Image (cartoon, rainbow over all chains, first blue to last red; front, top):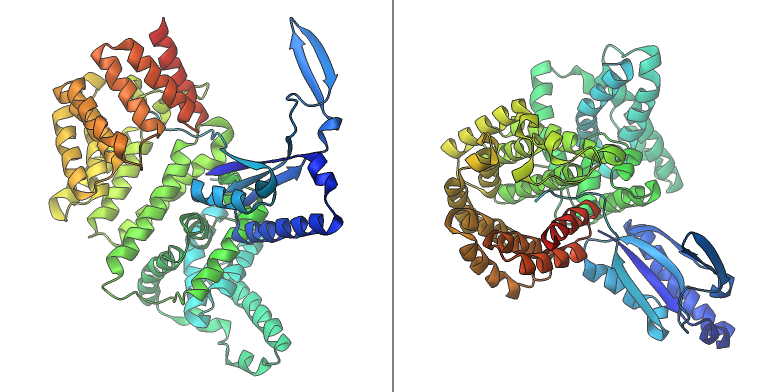
Length: 120
Length: 414
């Protein structure tokens, strides 16, 4: 089963950390990424640019309106995602638990929809 | 059949034999498996142009052995242990056995390879990937595309699987008699997983994925030839054939799912149905009963009904009762509840479902909500049925199932 692990964090908090603190977080991330690559569970993932670079697009009555900034105004922003292919939900949650952002902010684990299905 | 299709067909049949010859001789499963893949690739490129050699198996073995020797030589020179290279047998040793002897060896070899690929130390995902590559002769790219993951991910999964076999001391030997049934069981489970992955894929964009169904049937048929007396192998083959026979009727051209009761049965493929019924009938008469045979028998009863309303539900109910005794699990109970509802009325089916709410393996699963919705609809309670369909639609992680469940809920809201 494939899961997306949504990484949430607060850019202001991140910015307040020292280089050493940030380096420690990056090395935690490296360890997990290596493990997921070697186990054949890593399907993909990307980091997102800061939410200040986002544009929100709405179309109302056929008229598009484009505004600067993210759709949801919140302190914690979507910062990136991983897609993993795991044997169980517990395993996906375990990976999220070890991701550094889970200690300071939050990770969200969501199954991906499959195009396969069983008739009932 | 085009030349390249004929070549591919031949290569896929020879792959496990060639691999087994190398593993038998050099006992290095991981390196031998890589060498055979390279030989298969070389053949796939050269044969359609240059023609199939007179002794294709010998050709593949020679090329694979050369790769393996190169590999071993570079590995060993790195470790300064070149002396052992001389101990490697020359390639032509393989092609001098008698044809009868070869046949018997190949039969055992395919089975031993399957045992190794389905080694209990591996995760199901690794067992599936390695079986498709080492025994099925598929390339890593083909397997990756069937499972919708990047090729690098699949390659890593295969490498890791081979390392785990090595670490677990998995050998290319006949397992002890005591272990035999559980090893066969593991192989059947892997073949079943491969079949399911292909069968549940919708047609169209997932064509590559649905090829897995054909591959699973091909491999299960091979195991059935090797173990004709094993009723569960026959049962699994029958189950696959009877299930796959419904493929032309199970989806609409737009990819939406058609429930069993509404399928156009004239579209069901008759040849696999005949074969499946014959297989399961013989197995049930001559061997100990098991879960695959019972599931195949249930599929056979459905297949025998010309119209949905002709279905022999009392017989299906009896088979589910047996299945629940032989292999109790909540998914069986769910289907059992449907059969109970069809024979004794939806209220009794719903009573059986109530017991599952406390079972953590299935509580919160969309199938429980979907079956409950169906039975509530049978009782005429449209409001409760609709709520259950909606809950099932939210919980499923399958797009076509969600679409089906939403349409059932919407129909009840009218």
